[in-house]
Length: 235
Image (cartoon, rainbow, N blue to C red; front, side, top):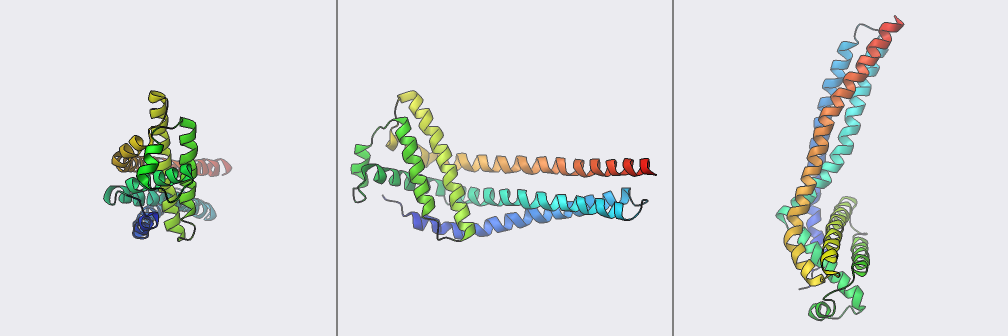
């Protein structure tokens, strides 16, 4: 069965809303936290000349907003991709689209049937498989050129995630067998890629958000303390 990559891409329009909601949620959370940190910083420095507490508060709020925009963007992409992988199983579809493109490129015959391609490509050297994979992914990314910015970003990120995971499987298979059985690897990846990549995405973004939740208040407290000590010294 040949996968219509353009049809697969249609799902990303719906996932764009998941990304937007996730981004707004994280950003709002950081802005609210920034207002609390800014208020605390201002309160600690309120006895000094007004530009100092106001400036410290604005810096604290700006730091929270910057962190919210940066982490919100990362979380938005991860949430949308995880949704597509878990609910729509887009990873498996992209794996098949990638391997179909690899097969067609390798045979240099676009009208060859998939069954014929598979029989002719049972096993290839690791280096050749890696080059074919990279070329196929770049070709599929090129198909996204006319899509909207967010949809294009989502498709590109997901294809890159599929490429990295596939490359790791190629190297594992190559180390064991001395060559890559493309049909075998493709079938294994179609079954496992969605779960594995989704878990990695959620874990990565969760760790980043927890680190920010620890680092940001510590940073605001430290800079407030330094300003306080400096003003005390100047006084």
